Amino acid sequence: MLTEGILLLHDNARPYTAAQTRASLDSFGWEVLDHTLYSPDFATSDFHLFRHIKHHLGGNHYNDDEDVRTAVTSWLLEQVASFYEEGIQNLVVRYDKCLNKLGSFVEK
Image (cartoon, rainbow, N blue to C red; front, side):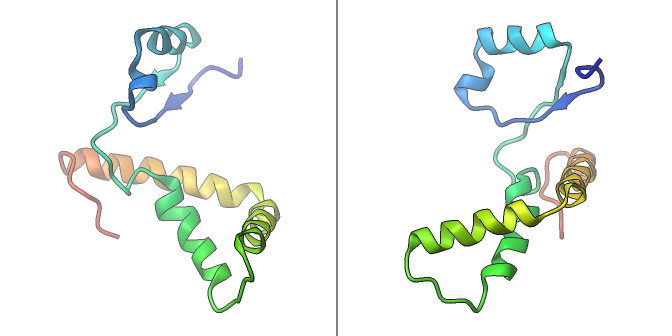
């Protein structure tokens, strides 16, 4: 079954912590991991995607927001599945390190 063994990590915003949302997640049988206060260690966009996108966009000139949007979208679509898997796997390692440091930020 596709829902077995799923771990869910999301922030603690009100819509995610509402009783109805928690009940839905419980019905799926997913394990929901506790999230510490905002930490860039847990935002895959911060520690994985943005670093690579910044490198890709660096040194280029864009005429407007649409050019940047097109460049980013194109770059995201060019990435192979293993690129995204690597980011998710690194998230597991970072989460473990942070828990072992009792919530402290993870050094890069």
